[in-house]
Length: 201
Image 1 (cartoon, rainbow, N blue to C red):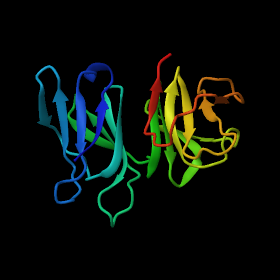
Image 2: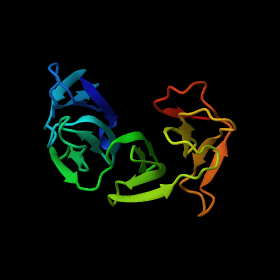
Image 3: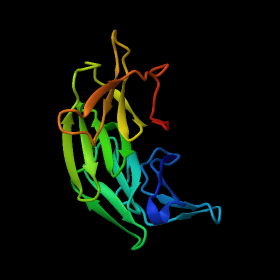
Image 4: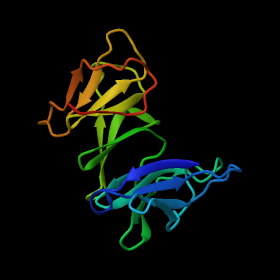
């Protein structure tokens, strides 16, 4: 089963990566395939350092980042981030990743995540220096937990999974001056079954 596909940035913009998380018998896999639309072919490349199921992937700076997931039901979710460099055809790892991510979005040069264990904080990852920043989610707009992310004009939208009375969509502007990053938006989804949303004005 193909779990995730990620469009690599810059030099690999035309190539897709597919992580195979689970085989037909239910076993976790570590296989990775790359698709080249110029040749219309998939090829196997170097496998992940460990099998993963329930993970996600994103591309930055011509590299593929794989985060979260677990090798089996008896082993907890991995905190390691696997990073694939296609030029050297090697995997390396970063030790401080998110686990059990419920929502994620790539905005500019940063990855925004929300973990199941703490859904009132944004975890912001900068691949440039492999650093994390935690940002509390205010109660303004929605006091519930559980969000899905959207992107609108360089800003992050947080859609609540609970339509409570007076609910307003939260909006986070990472480039705003300190103290004014959080706002609310009148944009509301028509339903609660969301994965991710990207809006271009």
